[in-house]
Image (tube, rainbow, N blue to C red):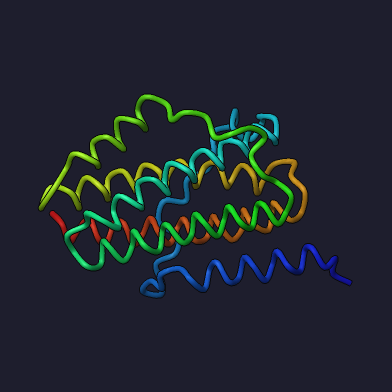
Length: 182
């Protein structure tokens, strides 16, 4: 018999996935990045904090993309990404795993990426945005894979499983969108 909390998380996770973009079928295994050994060996709470911080970065970038993207499909992707990050944060909250402390200030390279998006306009914006999204999703894939494979409670593993599949889809979509901007 399912624990009601686990079932609620599974339903919430399915809802998150349903809200995501649907990609062309048959292209699921591109970039199956695995986390470095040191990431899976970190304290589980530290990996959770990394997931929250990475989600905060992707959310900030997505909000900028929602305003500044030039191509409708890139703007739509930014909207999907913002909803996904809000959904993952809510699922983590439901699972009882909010950040251990307020999200720390972004590291210098991420602050620079956000500043670059804020100052880039016009035709140069979409390629810059997609580059930032690609790097952020590669990192997120490593972190959520570590959550999935690490010593986490079942609700977190469920969220991580759903997130890694969606992140892989997003990486494929980002690649498709980048090919259209070159």
